[in-house]
Image (tube, rainbow, N blue to C red; front, side):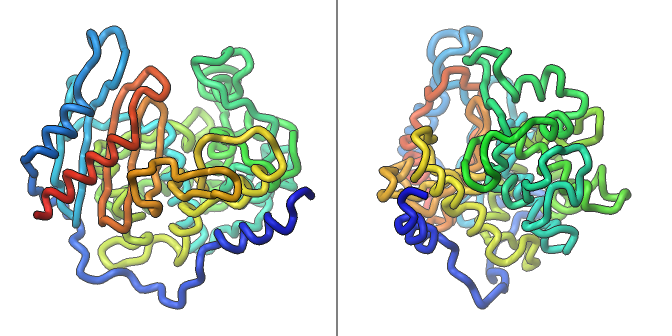
Length: 380
């Protein structure tokens, strides 16, 4: 393999550090049925609102920034909350690919309960897949190697695997549709962003569980413990939770999910995710590193595992995605502007729901910088 010494050095440098202590943080302000709220008002409030909520043209034209809600949680308290376009605090919002990060949590919860391991073959827990060389770790890292085209509405629909899965021939049994695809690459060697990998991962998790958990594990393991009372995970006709795309929740409940990851997978003093899981999922994806050293086709973002990171990888020519934001920032990100951004060094969670129909219309670096400035102003 080309660049083997550099690959080894990079993987070693980017590997999560082992921790001898699995204790949960003390003195944390956990949300109860409602979030503690200290709405901040000041120049930074106006700056964030003017940037995030100013429409261009009429709403029906679907142009420009189309924010539905913004929530900023700092030191465990809501310091900013605003809604628009008919949405309010009690309206669940389609999360699109933010759902993938929820599947990451559910996978960790299955691992910590001993129902599966990351080294298991997908065929150990799910029958409708042709390539048993794929492991759960490969799916987690979006390194399945399956021949998959993640094309959306701006691409030819007839070439898109994900559109066929969600709306076409694969819609009734999405995981089986993914599993019917052949290999394009050796599993574990090439990163390709794939909703198919996450849907198949969702079916594999369910397949590892007792029958009485198949239709309830997201609610029992994640939504109920965190008090995410608005959260819903849609299933396809075969009963698979559509982990790529179809979770719904209010911004406050999305913030609860971000808060779980802000505190290393702990909630009210109880560890819900394995020790080191958050760092593993939100650190630089090693399959991406290996792929970027060998292949010319690369993503603009540095991925984790079912999350996006702000880590620079200068050896590969990658700067921090958001230069005005701390490098420890990570994000669950969904189509049309859904985001949960977690900044551990600032004790900050920022949620945005939206309907941005134009790709790249939001300057996310500026948006997050303004949210940080508001949180800092609220501290004064």
